[in-house]
Image 1 (cartoon, rainbow, N blue to C red):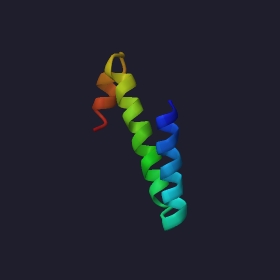
Image 2: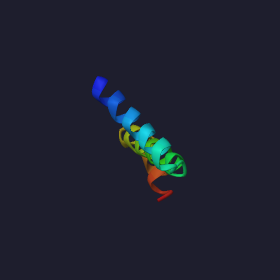
Image 3: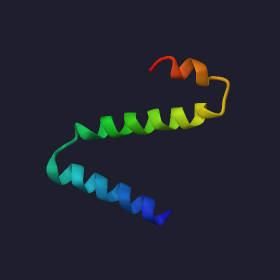
Image 4: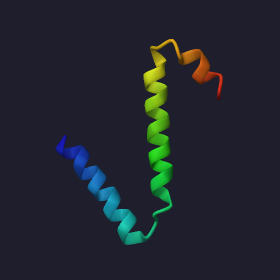
Length: 53
C-alpha cells in the first residue's frame, strides 16, 4: 500500500514541477474506464458496455 502512495505522490510532484496539469484528467479518465471494464467483465452489463466500443 505504501508503494502505491509513493507512486501517486511522485506523479503529483511531476505534474507540479513540469506544469503539466492537463495530463491529470486524462489519467483519471483512463483509470475510471479501466475500472469500469474490469467491473463489467463478470456482470450482466458486459454486452451493453462492450457495444459502446
